[in-house]
Length: 263
Image 1 (cartoon, one colour):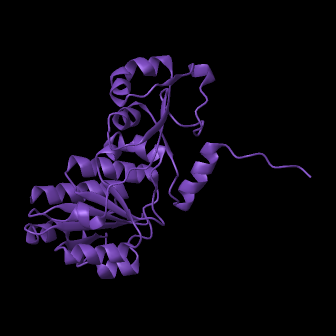
Image 2: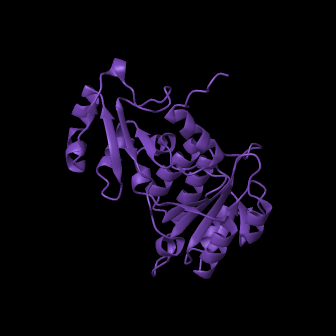
Image 3: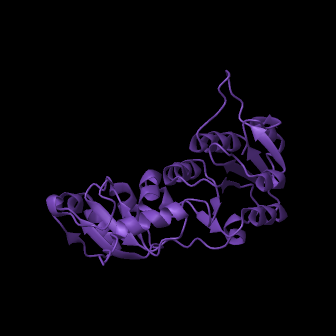
């Protein structure tokens, strides 16, 4: 009987990512993701591995963090991450961020914030890009369910290019329940769909004095029926020509831009 060997850590993490499971710790990689995590006082940092060149480039951030880096030569770099990862000689093991509850983060507090709701958006690259757009356009939070969504991973953090450290990414138990809670706080929820009955820009103009939540579904299946029914209205982004479909991260960016114009 042949005893099976233990799976490498990066393989285990990749399998957890596919299942949408929360990682116990996260290995961030790449200069931007590692630098911003090092200087984030809210981030619990565990282990830092750098090449000599990366150590020079990140010297100030390492000093700010108070960490002592393990220095490894590029040819003998043994961080437990996917060998295909473009790590730039910098990896950092951290604990996932804790942002607080939905009611704490999203309470309007006398303003008219915008939040994003992600329904079954599982690609970490899409979520990372959405976090970047959310930070640029001032979204209060990006909200997604624990199941069937992208957990916090190195790939997500690298695509977010540091935004993960500053932009609240709330993982909640049930999306429909979270939507009802937002409604109780005064949010007007607009689902984005290419077959929407009205234009997004028009709906945002009508609701300019209200907190807004934009709900986006996965590419292909789009919004689930329950999510669609819980929205106050389903709208489409105005487009030219016959091809009216956008990648979900692009749709989020357009939606956030349109919402920012009205605020």
